[in-house]
Image 1 (spheres, rainbow, N blue to C red):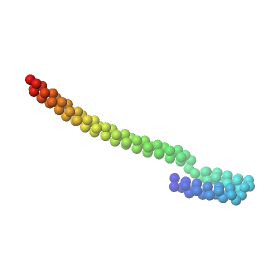
Image 2: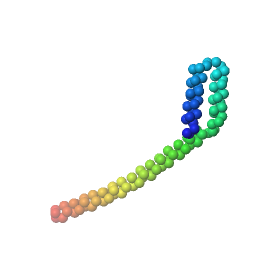
Image 3: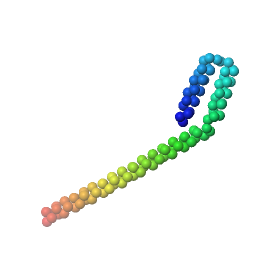
Image 4: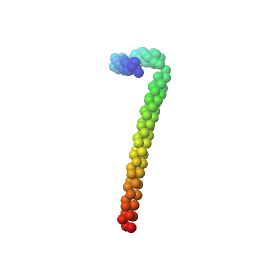
Amino acid sequence: MHTLAPRLAAAANDAARHATICHTAICHASAYHAAIAMTATAVPGIGAVAAIVVIILVTTALAKAARSLAALLAELLRAATAVTSVLLTTVIAIFLGIAFLVH
């Protein structure tokens, strides 16, 4: 990837220079041949490899986020069961206290 940016910059610079300096068919043909020569030296399939790497990295990040979310939900459910048991115990104690006071 670090070699792609300088090549693109050089190609854009050359294309701009050719477009402003000469408009003949010979200049356009030489620019065409230069572009073909540049693409011939590029590694074929590098875009697909980069896309696959990005997909793998995103999938890994999503899996890590899902594991963290599952752990968070497990902790929240544990806290909710603790609160529910305390609340249920309190309600039973109040109910028994009222029942003893009435009789």
